[in-house]
Image (cartoon, rainbow, N blue to C red; front, side, top):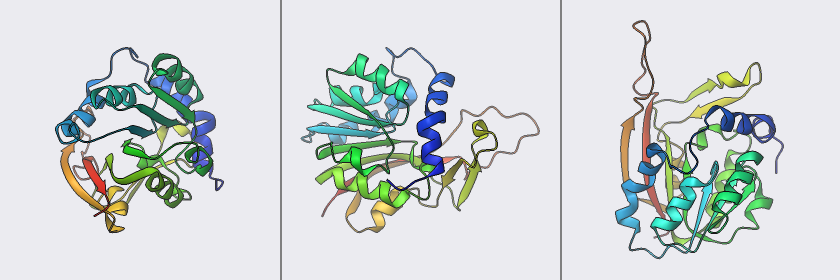
Length: 228
């Protein structure tokens, strides 16, 4: 894997810190996560989904939910937090196998079989720009022909880079690009849009003096199918 300060920071510090900041009842899947998959379930339920892969799977609760709801055989997860991986393998190990790593690490992907569905929920913006193309290549390589890619990502109208406020002085950024990161797959000519929905993040509480950038906080959930 190409060396990346941002990817290494997530592997060594931020992913575990994120888990500590966002603890919840791991026996109860948050509605926001559930809705990510539920919106597309009707279109996927009749498809033959053998293996599911999630990039940035946290503890694997969404992955496990997806495997069960689609009656898949097994789920694979890649997650930079070692603590989350340990929790997930203990809790969901009957149906899911989690690995510590990042999307740019091709060695981890080599141990995962082809998958009929890949989930990427609010992860692409945090992937290092040094490894973004390797990450896209790794993901594409694990999707079976005719398989599906489900992405939740920012959908701004311009290129944006925001500093991660939890990272102190470390150069760690959230990258938002026009068309979302799904556009990289679409522009390859080998992915077609099956279904999508656009929404605005309404979770932010604003004071009277805050300015809300509608386009910067616009999101897309999009289901892509690989092949012609």
